[in-house]
Length: 200
Image 1: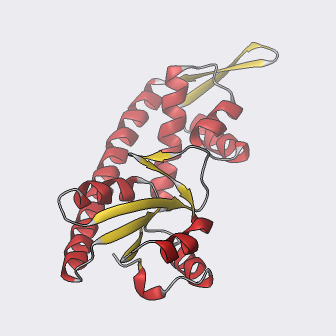
Image 2: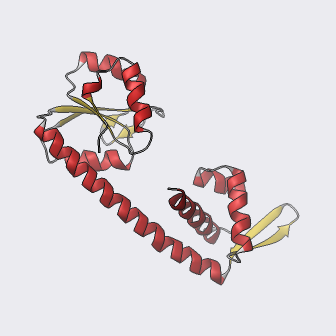
Image 3: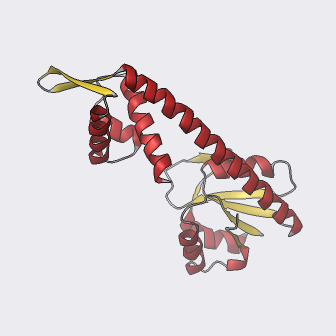
Protein backbone atom coordinates (compact mmCIF):
# COMPACT_ATOMS: atom_id res chain seq x y z
CA UNK A 1 0.00 0.00 0.00
CA UNK A 2 2.83 2.41 0.85
CA UNK A 3 4.42 1.76 -2.54
CA UNK A 4 1.14 2.66 -4.30
CA UNK A 5 0.80 5.80 -2.18
CA UNK A 6 4.40 6.82 -2.96
CA UNK A 7 3.80 6.30 -6.69
CA UNK A 8 0.57 8.33 -6.54
CA UNK A 9 2.18 11.25 -4.65
CA UNK A 10 5.32 11.41 -6.83
CA UNK A 11 3.25 11.12 -10.00
CA UNK A 12 0.88 13.83 -8.74
CA UNK A 13 3.71 16.24 -7.90
CA UNK A 14 5.45 15.74 -11.26
CA UNK A 15 2.17 16.08 -13.14
CA UNK A 16 1.15 19.29 -11.36
CA UNK A 17 4.61 20.82 -11.82
CA UNK A 18 4.51 19.98 -15.53
CA UNK A 19 1.14 21.78 -15.79
CA UNK A 20 2.27 24.84 -13.83
CA UNK A 21 5.84 25.38 -12.64
CA UNK A 22 4.69 28.17 -10.31
CA UNK A 23 2.49 25.82 -8.29
CA UNK A 24 3.04 26.31 -4.55
CA UNK A 25 3.60 23.64 -1.93
CA UNK A 26 0.27 24.66 -0.38
CA UNK A 27 -1.50 24.04 -3.70
CA UNK A 28 0.30 20.71 -4.11
CA UNK A 29 -0.71 19.75 -0.58
CA UNK A 30 -4.35 20.65 -1.22
CA UNK A 31 -4.51 18.90 -4.62
CA UNK A 32 -2.85 15.71 -3.40
CA UNK A 33 -4.54 15.75 0.03
CA UNK A 34 -1.29 15.30 1.93
CA UNK A 35 0.50 17.51 4.45
CA UNK A 36 2.80 20.32 3.34
CA UNK A 37 5.62 18.60 5.24
CA UNK A 38 5.15 15.46 3.15
CA UNK A 39 5.03 17.50 -0.08
CA UNK A 40 8.26 19.23 0.98
CA UNK A 41 9.98 15.88 1.67
CA UNK A 42 8.89 14.44 -1.69
CA UNK A 43 9.94 17.61 -3.54
CA UNK A 44 13.41 17.53 -1.95
CA UNK A 45 13.74 13.89 -2.95
CA UNK A 46 12.67 14.63 -6.55
CA UNK A 47 15.15 17.55 -6.72
CA UNK A 48 17.96 15.35 -5.32
CA UNK A 49 17.23 12.69 -7.94
CA UNK A 50 17.49 15.32 -10.67
CA UNK A 51 13.84 15.10 -11.75
CA UNK A 52 12.92 18.65 -10.74
CA UNK A 53 14.86 21.94 -10.97
CA UNK A 54 14.08 24.85 -8.66
CA UNK A 55 14.69 28.49 -9.53
CA UNK A 56 13.83 31.78 -7.83
CA UNK A 57 11.77 34.04 -10.08
CA UNK A 58 11.52 36.70 -7.36
CA UNK A 59 12.64 36.60 -3.77
CA UNK A 60 9.18 35.34 -2.76
CA UNK A 61 8.40 33.16 -5.80
CA UNK A 62 9.83 29.77 -6.61
CA UNK A 63 9.45 28.08 -9.99
CA UNK A 64 9.71 24.34 -10.49
CA UNK A 65 10.61 22.71 -13.78
CA UNK A 66 10.75 19.08 -14.82
CA UNK A 67 14.09 17.98 -16.25
CA UNK A 68 14.29 15.48 -19.14
CA UNK A 69 14.85 12.78 -16.51
CA UNK A 70 11.83 14.11 -14.63
CA UNK A 71 9.61 13.80 -17.71
CA UNK A 72 10.83 10.23 -18.26
CA UNK A 73 10.14 9.43 -14.60
CA UNK A 74 6.67 10.95 -14.83
CA UNK A 75 5.80 8.71 -17.80
CA UNK A 76 7.27 5.67 -16.03
CA UNK A 77 5.17 6.47 -12.95
CA UNK A 78 2.09 7.00 -15.16
CA UNK A 79 2.51 3.49 -16.61
CA UNK A 80 3.09 2.03 -13.15
CA UNK A 81 0.12 3.93 -11.71
CA UNK A 82 -2.13 2.74 -14.55
CA UNK A 83 -1.03 -0.88 -14.05
CA UNK A 84 -1.70 -0.66 -10.30
CA UNK A 85 -5.11 0.90 -11.01
CA UNK A 86 -6.02 -1.86 -13.47
CA UNK A 87 -4.97 -4.52 -10.95
CA UNK A 88 -7.05 -2.77 -8.29
CA UNK A 89 -10.14 -2.63 -10.54
CA UNK A 90 -9.72 -6.28 -11.52
CA UNK A 91 -9.59 -7.14 -7.81
CA UNK A 92 -12.71 -5.04 -7.11
CA UNK A 93 -14.56 -6.62 -10.05
CA UNK A 94 -13.85 -10.16 -8.82
CA UNK A 95 -14.79 -9.27 -5.24
CA UNK A 96 -18.05 -7.60 -6.33
CA UNK A 97 -19.00 -10.53 -8.59
CA UNK A 98 -18.47 -12.97 -5.69
CA UNK A 99 -20.52 -10.79 -3.37
CA UNK A 100 -23.41 -10.54 -5.86
CA UNK A 101 -23.50 -14.33 -6.21
CA UNK A 102 -23.56 -14.70 -2.41
CA UNK A 103 -26.36 -12.12 -2.04
CA UNK A 104 -28.44 -13.92 -4.69
CA UNK A 105 -27.93 -17.27 -2.95
CA UNK A 106 -29.05 -15.68 0.34
CA UNK A 107 -32.13 -14.34 -1.52
CA UNK A 108 -31.36 -10.76 -0.53
CA UNK A 109 -33.91 -8.32 -1.97
CA UNK A 110 -33.02 -4.95 -0.44
CA UNK A 111 -29.74 -3.37 0.61
CA UNK A 112 -28.27 -0.10 1.79
CA UNK A 113 -24.73 1.00 1.08
CA UNK A 114 -22.18 2.31 3.53
CA UNK A 115 -19.51 4.09 1.47
CA UNK A 116 -19.58 5.96 -1.84
CA UNK A 117 -16.14 5.37 -3.38
CA UNK A 118 -14.96 3.30 -6.35
CA UNK A 119 -16.04 0.01 -4.78
CA UNK A 120 -19.57 1.34 -4.18
CA UNK A 121 -19.82 2.61 -7.76
CA UNK A 122 -18.90 -0.78 -9.20
CA UNK A 123 -21.24 -2.51 -6.72
CA UNK A 124 -24.04 -0.17 -7.85
CA UNK A 125 -23.44 -1.03 -11.51
CA UNK A 126 -23.55 -4.77 -10.79
CA UNK A 127 -26.73 -4.44 -8.72
CA UNK A 128 -28.40 -2.99 -11.81
CA UNK A 129 -28.30 -6.46 -13.40
CA UNK A 130 -30.10 -8.07 -10.43
CA UNK A 131 -33.45 -7.85 -8.67
CA UNK A 132 -31.74 -6.53 -5.54
CA UNK A 133 -32.98 -3.03 -4.69
CA UNK A 134 -30.63 -0.36 -3.38
CA UNK A 135 -32.72 1.57 -0.86
CA UNK A 136 -30.30 4.25 0.30
CA UNK A 137 -26.66 5.25 0.77
CA UNK A 138 -24.87 6.25 3.98
CA UNK A 139 -21.41 7.58 4.77
CA UNK A 140 -19.48 8.32 7.97
CA UNK A 141 -18.58 11.89 6.97
CA UNK A 142 -21.10 13.44 4.63
CA UNK A 143 -20.60 16.72 2.83
CA UNK A 144 -23.86 18.67 2.54
CA UNK A 145 -25.96 17.74 -0.49
CA UNK A 146 -23.60 14.92 -1.52
CA UNK A 147 -25.14 12.66 -4.15
CA UNK A 148 -24.37 9.07 -5.11
CA UNK A 149 -25.96 8.59 -8.52
CA UNK A 150 -29.62 9.53 -7.80
CA UNK A 151 -29.33 8.99 -4.04
CA UNK A 152 -28.92 11.73 -1.45
CA UNK A 153 -26.13 10.44 0.81
CA UNK A 154 -27.21 10.22 4.45
CA UNK A 155 -25.17 10.46 7.63
CA UNK A 156 -24.19 7.08 9.11
CA UNK A 157 -25.72 8.11 12.46
CA UNK A 158 -29.15 7.98 10.81
CA UNK A 159 -28.76 4.31 9.86
CA UNK A 160 -30.14 2.65 13.05
CA UNK A 161 -33.44 4.56 12.79
CA UNK A 162 -33.55 3.90 9.04
CA UNK A 163 -33.16 0.13 9.56
CA UNK A 164 -36.02 0.15 12.11
CA UNK A 165 -38.34 1.89 9.64
CA UNK A 166 -37.43 0.04 6.42
CA UNK A 167 -37.11 -3.58 5.30
CA UNK A 168 -33.32 -3.83 4.90
CA UNK A 169 -31.99 -7.33 4.19
CA UNK A 170 -28.32 -6.32 4.15
CA UNK A 171 -26.08 -3.36 4.90
CA UNK A 172 -23.20 -3.52 2.43
CA UNK A 173 -19.91 -2.01 3.58
CA UNK A 174 -18.35 -0.91 0.30
CA UNK A 175 -14.64 -0.48 0.88
CA UNK A 176 -11.66 -2.65 1.72
CA UNK A 177 -9.93 -0.64 4.46
CA UNK A 178 -11.12 0.01 8.04
CA UNK A 179 -13.97 -2.48 7.57
CA UNK A 180 -13.74 -3.85 11.11
CA UNK A 181 -13.88 -0.32 12.53
CA UNK A 182 -17.10 0.54 10.65
CA UNK A 183 -18.63 -2.88 11.40
CA UNK A 184 -17.90 -2.42 15.12
CA UNK A 185 -19.38 1.09 15.00
CA UNK A 186 -22.59 -0.22 13.42
CA UNK A 187 -22.93 -2.97 16.03
CA UNK A 188 -22.32 -0.42 18.82
CA UNK A 189 -25.14 1.65 17.30
CA UNK A 190 -27.47 -1.29 17.88
CA UNK A 191 -27.56 -2.74 14.37
CA UNK A 192 -27.94 -6.52 14.11
CA UNK A 193 -24.55 -7.96 13.00
CA UNK A 194 -26.39 -10.55 10.87
CA UNK A 195 -27.52 -7.90 8.39
CA UNK A 196 -24.06 -6.31 8.06
CA UNK A 197 -22.15 -7.60 5.02
CA UNK A 198 -18.48 -6.75 5.14
CA UNK A 199 -17.11 -9.93 3.52
CA UNK A 200 -15.18 -9.80 0.29
